Length: 156
Image (cartoon, rainbow, N blue to C red; front, side, top):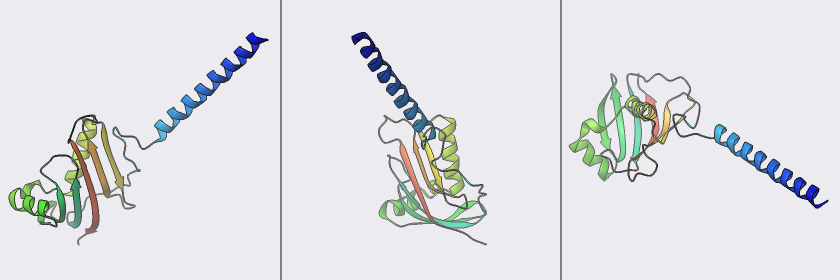
């Protein structure tokens, strides 16, 4: 009887482990994902020729850090206003570092092609990104980039 009892316990333990493993794999497959998968489905969005938006760029040690109000005309940054000290310095010293939303999406796609450990985006209902997060190497220090996009308005 002891052998049957051990076998039953072993079978239950194995069944429990298999069930737990299956659940964890299912959660991982259905989770937000990091490599090449955004955290929300992207609606079709075509970057307009002209628009304004606010960009909060943070994380990592990069040139582009700070909060900016950006105006895009004819597909290029026409005006950038630094809303904090770091952003004002960048606008003054390295104005070409201020991106369009399309350039931010290009960076995201490049990270995905290069198999970055994290390359995620969240999108608004109209399809424009509201948050882009990239971490090229999970265990590296200061290689991350986080972009929060707000106050997006197409301009006629």
